[in-house]
Image (cartoon, rainbow, N blue to C red):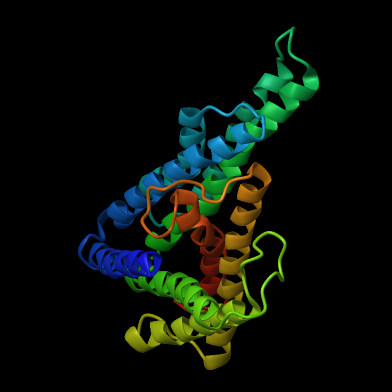
Length: 287
């Protein structure tokens, strides 16, 4: 019951706060929302370093937080430097991100004499990991926040899709979950919970255009496809993070978010859903 109240209060506070920020603070590519995203991303990097340390891989928390934030912050800066020039922004981002990865592997190219090359390779690969997860996966959130003319409804729609999936999965799984143990990464997940998750995503897919019919057009089959794609991404993100925690022998990544756990526990589904949502709405012409 306590966990239910914590989760309910979190959603009751988070969704109105996100709505207010999206509607009333849209300037500079929704800089206020991007700032929150970067804070959460830094928190994810810090918790990720703890998971790697638990497995015996040396990971410095401040460095991993900085590496996690770097892609999103760099992309937001490029969008401000080259407004309206998506081609130049993309080229600069790809080139810059490539340099970040090169820098992550410099320790392997120039190893210490007393350090085994295998150890050096593991450490270099580990440092590249936060650039990709959560770093690169969080970058599409910056792109969603910068969509011309439709960024506000797109942000709200994305939040509804993720929260709808996650909340429906949790509620249905708790109330009607009978067939559990279907996935190794998270044995407590149930078949009924997965069904509820997709139902939540599909409902949210249709809710967006209902709230913003002019900004978010789309035929029913496109909305169904969007709901399915984002639903798969949300579930995959949750299971991916569960596998990370299980490999480190940890139940939660942290305890800073009431009813949720840590930053990673809260942000895991969003990280996988953001690139899928952004690609889907562009390819399906939903904004």
